[in-house]
Image (tube, rainbow, N blue to C red):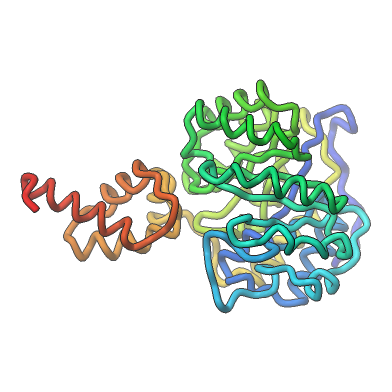
Length: 354
């Protein structure tokens, strides 16, 4: 870590609105490197972001990722007691882990009060949100803060999101996030969703923005303007596909914009980002055809490679196949889903003949 004077907070002093900034590099970034962060990587990221006064550092999953099963995943995919105990002590930031109920039993969190972790985020889809209250109660019983992340929020109608809010309100977490898992939302999409939630929940709201359409920062700002007070981000945008809002860019616009107040030390955040770019990322983050196709067609990025290969085998346009996948709003990423869409398209192209 370089020695330098802390950067000024910003021109507003303490008069602006101060969002809570959560860095999830060690958790969501693992989609890029199979969670193969070395002990040095974890130490550098945590200690530098803590020194930079980032509010929350999410250090990984407890119990694994729900969307990418891997037999070779590194330590931040599971956050074992040994991994957590080896993390550097923090003086400003709080440490968090994410739990996906479909892969992590509720009792698997019991040892967390003996770890450096002070917050657990529970991630669920709209179709399995009903299991979340049990986990919220369990985390609260452990004496830890609790957040809820609603994944695939782009798949919710107004009526469905209102139903989700009713479930969440039953156990009032410390923060409720909408996650644009497929990078499909526009700022207008964010505004109506956050507007609906602010009418129904007293809980602080957050947004986890993906950058498939190049709108991660714009969606974060739209969220802030609509009532969001928590932002997710990751260094160098490191995450699945097109990646997230970049932590260094979030810290930069919060510093530059007089309406917001932040104590994040921007040079130190950039130092952490440079380390990730040079020492951690297996390849630069890009927003190319595959990432854009997943965003515009509103489906999980892990479908895209399957769509390209299976569409080619059937002689079909992968963009049209992808559009139909998104319209179907599948709950799991499977080859069979793509095959079914392709067979139906072939049948239609042949005039309805099987």
